[in-house]
Image 1 (spheres, rainbow, N blue to C red):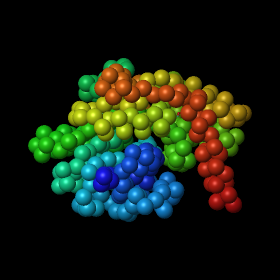
Image 2: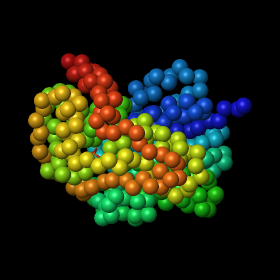
Image 3: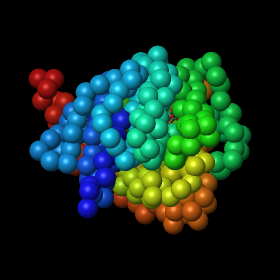
Length: 319
Ligand code: UDP
């Protein structure tokens, strides 16, 4: 049997690299295209001697062609609030130009296509929990708009290629995901709290810490992607863990798992920070038979060794 070949844009990122592992396990040859703006070679280092794995360092904001592929997984984009704030214009470009180019590859080769979208499409939601049919409450000119609107545009281009060019597309709306390979300095709440707790520094809680997020462990998230990739659903599907926590509760779980004595330090809430986030996963449950299995405390324990190593490496590098 001929091995199918998958393209993963952004495959050196946190989620992209875990997806590569899963696709190799599914029997794909995998080619990653990533410009390493926020992706890291370290995330794919373990795959460097795999015959079925290939890495191409390239910016997909320029047209590109890596030869025939059977599946395009379009995951390229800065994704943490700190990263997309620093790289605002590249974020808009990869969501727009990059998405056209990824879809052009799928169109040219008749490949299937799955794109990573985000719960940011719901903005600061007025509907709770968020169903895929909710259109969102998004500030189109605020500091988060470079990411939110890029991803909303990504969804629009994807649906247009599906409708006009008959590309076989899928859209996954991802909610806060964490686990090994989360970059230590990406500013996300889990990476910040784990780093701070392990260093014995205060945990920086923004605002009162009463805002909520629903955290999905990476292996559950990837399982959702693989199931969606095998389905023929073209409209967006939420993949996230519906167990919702306040940020203060998240801090307490991190303190418990790390055994840290760190205190809490309250800091100002960033502008447009969503007050609540919880996926309604009825669609993923019924359509894909998908259900997250790992809850927050267990997921933090599974991530602990990774964060300890990352903190130790950073400490050594600083000496
Ligand atoms: N947050 C926090 N302290 C931090 C980092 C983040 O209190 O050191 C809060 C942030 O204000 C937000 C939530 O944690 O309410 C999740 O932030 P994150 O950057 O991880 O992702 P978001 O869901 O906002 O995209």
